Length: 168
Image (cartoon, rainbow, N blue to C red; front, side, top):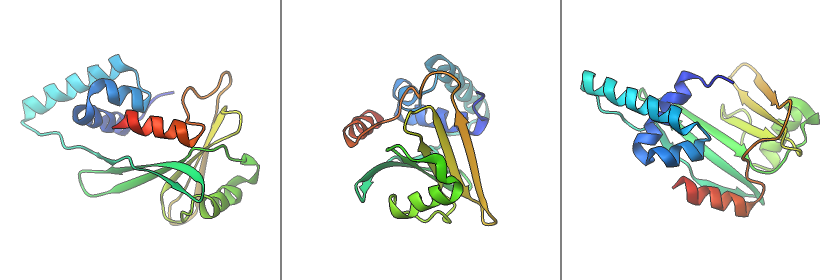
């Protein structure tokens, strides 16, 4: 799977702010690839005389209605914002868009029409679904692993607390 350049740029900024090792482990990226990109960005900013500003604004953790989730908020240099809400507990994928929108409302206590990006995983941790609303309709993307399971996904509030401690 190829990681989009905008994600690499955010990862580089996070690595500059929080440290390379911590950013690579929290974001699940290859340490050496991230190190090369940080070095290249540093060299480019030195040539251009730019100061790198952090794009990753916050990574708060919360537990709403007994369902732990993780919210990530990105802010672009021109003021654009993106919020990603990751549901920690497994979700039933059989309901499609309507079922996932219902989970957003009832369990996560979030508005599915807000434009936020919602990320869910299935019970066996072999697939994820991403749901968002763009003002005209819902977008639903699914990634199913052909072999194995997701390498890291917190399975309980205890594991989420451990992730939050690692993130800071």
